[in-house]
Image 1 (cartoon, rainbow, N blue to C red):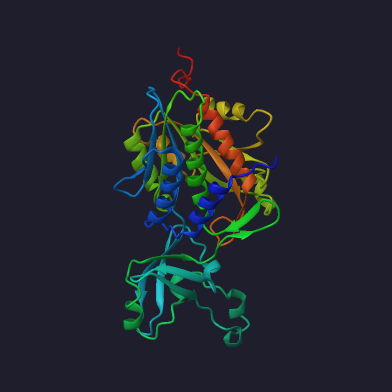
Image 2 (spheres, helix red, strand yellow):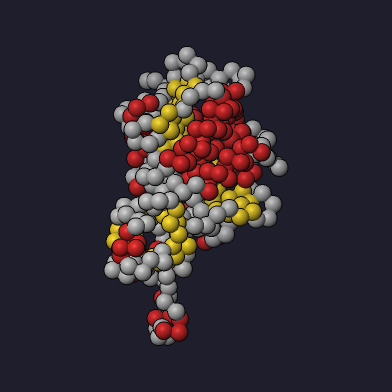
Length: 363
C-alpha cells in the first residue's frame, strides 16, 4: 500500500498533536489547522462563538456536505489547591484514572505552561494488600505535584479552572506506525482538513458545496457537532473519528469487529448511517483503497450522531481510523490508514453532485 503524507502535511500533524487541546481549550489546535488550510487554498477559515473552526468551499451547488472531525482531547481541569501546594483535578472527558498515576502533566497556567506530576505512594510504605491496587481509582486520590510548597506559591502559577493534559508526545514506532497522546481525535480533524484542501485545490468535478468543521468539546457531549450542524444545516454529513482497533486486544473482536492497524479506513454500517452514502463511499474505494467494515448497532459517541440528530437531520456516514489504546497517553495508529482515509473521502465527495440520491424509492 505504502500510502504517504507529504512533508507539509506531516509538519502540520506533528504540530497539531504537540499542542495541548483539552476540551474547552482547543484554540491552539484550531489555529494550526486554519493556517494549513489558508496557506494551501487561499480560503479564509473562521472560528465561531463556540470555538469551532469552519472553512467553506462554495461550488454554487444546491447541496452541502459537512466534513467534520473533533479537535479536542481528554484532559484535566484544576479543581482545588491545598495548603501545601498540591493540585487536585477533575477529568475533562473519559479519563481512565489509574493510567494517570505517575504520569507527567502540563497545565496552561497564568504565565505559561506549568509542569507537574501525578504523585504515587512508594511501594515501601504499602502493605501487601495495598500493593494489589497501586493506582488510585479516583482523581481526588491522586495529588498533582507542581513543585509548589504552599497554596500561595501554587496560585501564582495556576487558577481554578485551568486545563491540562498528560505530557506524552510523538513517538515513531516500526514502519508507518506512531504513538502519541490525543490522536483521538486531532487525527480526524487533520484528515478532514487535508480532504478539504485537496477538494479546494484540485480540478475534480466536485458538484457539491463542502463545509469543513473542526469541532470542539466532543469529549463532553458532542457539543461542537450539534452547534455546527445546526448552523450549517448540511444535506450530507461525513464524520472522521477514530475507532477501536482489535488487533492488540483480540478478545474485543466479537463485540467490536475485526479492525486492524494498516488494513485501511473503517466504514461504519448500521441504522445511524445512510446506506446509499455508505455504499457510495465503499464503491469509491474500488480495488486500490483498502477498507474495513464495522457494524454499529446504535448511535455512537461521534459527531456523525450529532449531524444525524440536529434539525431534520443529515444523511450521515462515518469513516474512522483504527486506533490502539484509545484514551491513554500512548495511542497508536498507522499513518498509512490516515493517508487512505484522506484519499477515500476526497474521492467519494469528488464524485458527488446535486443529483446524488438521498431519498429511497417512493411508494
